[in-house]
Image 1 (spheres, rainbow, N blue to C red):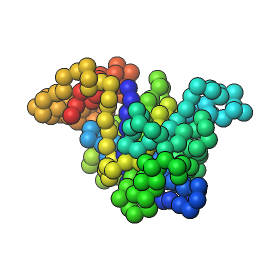
Image 2 (image 1 turned 45 degrees about the vertical axis):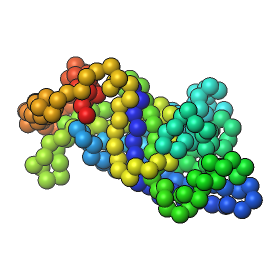
Image 3 (image 1 turned 90 degrees about the vertical axis):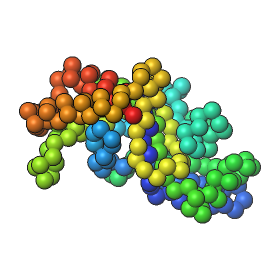
Image 4 (image 1 turned 180 degrees about the horizontal axis):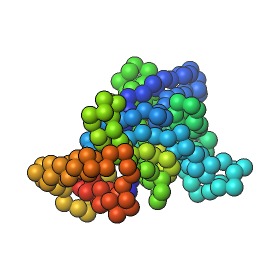
Length: 226
């Protein structure tokens, strides 16, 4: 299931003279707990390690067919801004998160337009699209700092990165692309019933992880929420 995360981020430009036009930014931040509609989520520092190894020719996990693109608004069917396979997109992780450096082509009009849009502040957010392989995430019941609130915390430990994008959306959101085409969404009343059931589970087992069968049910139910 493909997922997308949006976050307002620090994007900046470099160059603009001659053939040199760069976009630099952070597509994801580690250790920042984000509040999503039905659970909270945090990205572990290991989340992108495997994807980066797949693109390292000196690594045993190198996969010549694996590629990550830089897009605008995740428009994978449009002309990309850059891609790792031809070295126009560079990705690296530091202590703060996943960073990118995209070399735009000054001969392409859409590249020039986006460079100016970022430079002027019209576009100021980043995003990344990913899939979670089996075992790549962890779901736990968590007690809030005030000890009064229990909630589900999802930790992304290992994801398969699809792309990084410059986006217009300023908020941190989640969309589940593949599941919604096959399942009818729950009604507001059904959603409230699910939330009530989950809240009862929190009270009964605060701080304990879910069983595999519970996780499977939660994932299936959350994929149908709107």
